[in-house]
Length: 275
Ligand code: G3P
Ligand code: CA
Image 1 (cartoon, rainbow, N blue to C red):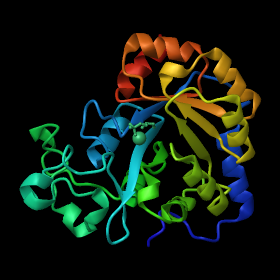
Image 2: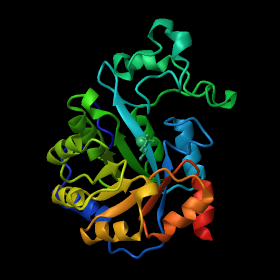
Image 3: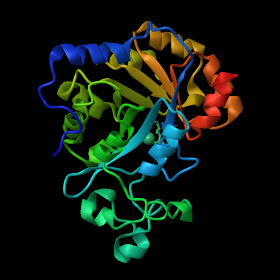
Image 4: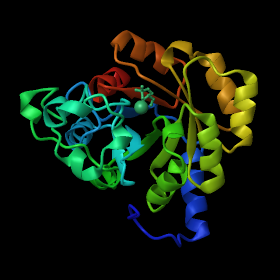
C-alpha cells in the first residue's frame, strides 16, 4: 500500500508539533472552521475530486470524507454501504447493484460513473482513493477522514493510520465506532482523532474520550449547546458539529462556540460567519 506523503520514519518531534497544533484549544479564536461535508456536496457529487475542487473554490478550511475498502485492499471514498445511490453500478454491473462496496475491486470501481447521478455536468467523475483525494487537498485544506462502518473492514484502522501518517498535520480521523477509534489510537496515538456521536455525549463518554487522547468530539448539531461545548473544552478537546445546511441553524450553532461546523454548503457558511 502506498503511503500518502512522507515516510514511516517521521521524526517524533515533528509529529508532536503537528498534534499540538491541531489539539491546541487555547489558540486565538476567529470563529468556527468551515468543513465541507463529503466535499462541497450541495454543489458537486459527494466524495469525488470534483467535490474537493468545489470545497477549495468555496474556501473550506477542511474537507470531510467517508472511507471504505475495496475487495483488493484499496482505501476509497464512498458514503453508503452500496454504490446504488451515487454511481451507475446498476447499469455497469446489473446483478451487483446492491452488493456491498467492499465486494468490488478498485478496477471495477473505476468503471463506474460517480458524477452523472448528481448532474450531467459531472459525468465521468470517478470514485477516488483516499490518496488521490488527499493529494488534491494537499497544502490547501485539511482532511477529516471518517472510518465508515469500520466493523466491515477488519484492520482498516491501521491501514488508514498508515496512509495518513505522512500528512503530519492537517488530518483528523473520526468514526461513530468508538471501539474502532480505540484501536486507531493504539495504532497511531500521534494522529488526531475524533469521536462522532448521533446523540448528546454523556459525561462518562467525554471522560472516556479524553482518556483515549481524543482531539475532537463531533456530534449532530441538534444536540449541541454552549454547556456541552464548555464540558468538551474543559477536558482539553474541541467540538465539531454535523451537518449544518440551514442559515439560521448555522448562526445558532456558531453562537454556542463550537470549533468547527460541517456543512454541504461551505460558501454559505462562510458568508454567515462573516456576518
Ligand atoms: O462528519 C460527520 C458526518 O459526515 C456523519 O454523518 O452520514 O454524513 O457520514 P454522515
Ligand atoms: Ca461522513
